[in-house]
Length: 140
View 1 (tube, rainbow, N blue to C red):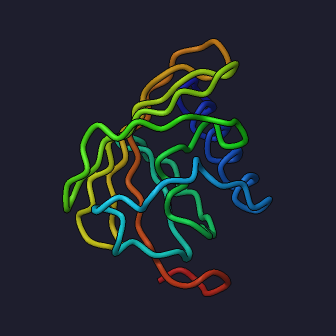
View 2 (view 1 turned 30 degrees about the vertical axis):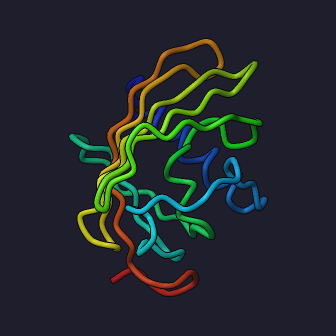
View 3 (view 1 turned 60 degrees about the horizontal axis):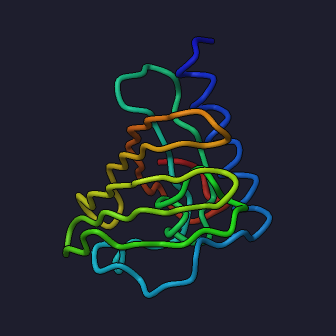
């Protein structure tokens, strides 16, 4: 597996593990763009890769804003809060920072672009997320 594929696998693995553990992002009001996005079963696919999508049960769609830095205490600064897109910057002392842009194509389809530093290394992720049902239901 190449470097990008391995980093993608690690990032999604950390996200799934932290979602299962109930980790929550920094508490803040829901962004306008995220109001219609609901919890459930989501498929996450890195843009430009042919690997199978990662299947995740997402309890809180706010996790899409911080696919990395999941367990860290972070401060949040909202750069843009539009009706169909949002840009947020998180600073997580001791672990790094991330700037995420989420575009909500529909409440069931998101484009996520994140970049920053995690554990001393830079990263840049582009992900398509698609809701496919409720947790525990088969993918459609």
